[in-house]
Figure 1 (cartoon, rainbow, N blue to C red):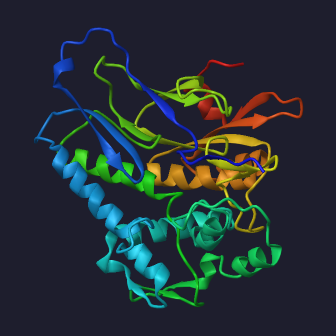
Figure 2: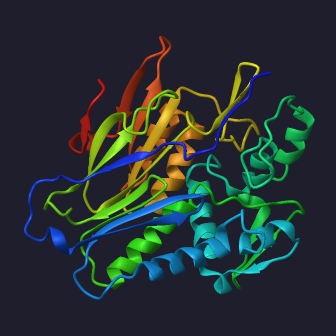
Length: 344
């Protein structure tokens, strides 16, 4: 048996800003730190009230205290352990993720489903001990599928979130980083910031212009296992919108020649295998982009494009593997005006 484990964010972005001269460059601030098992970066023009890194860190700590499955005392961890309810009004970050997840679950017809947590743990990609599956237990997978489905949760009109069945657990890893990006962006805007770029673990939201006076540009990685984080497939202009990407070529393990990726199909219970190598999603907010990028990896290229075309304000750029071992690109029409494709 040969096991190869790479637990990292599935698709890293290289963040760009033009280095030509600009009179007001000194007014741009740069902050970075750690959160959600990864890093964050902020670049912004301080135009109003002062921005302090301590405030950013405090905001992210409050978010993690509600939605991180790696913190035993978090709201989501307590909800997962206990057969009880949660009053959503008391936990705004948990509530926002739950409600947004329910919306994407409905629109994607279950391709995005945060109740997949028991299966994520079984396959070794969750908060439980990272242990590769060396012998698949199909009966175990079938039993865990019975716990999957947001219809097994009740969102009551009085604000309570109830489990209809014991053992149901939530996983917001496919949406929480995007939510964190939006939370920071909202904080910056509340401080009168009009020009910024916020990134957490590769999920990005940008507004206005960079310090050179240009529209923000973001690099999309080449989706190959051997590719470095600075090897790019394309460069994207990002004007007043968010971008999130999901892929299976970094977060996986291999057992006896069989690769198991972190994207678990909530319908089959198994790691998803299809021709889609990476899905980049553009949306007005990063939480939406993040969730749909996860859903698209489950759906595969054809159904992902179909779903993207049905959602107002949603655009996508897909990198697809070919039978010959190469790659091809498909995208929704608007993306053609934003993309400078480096690998054709």
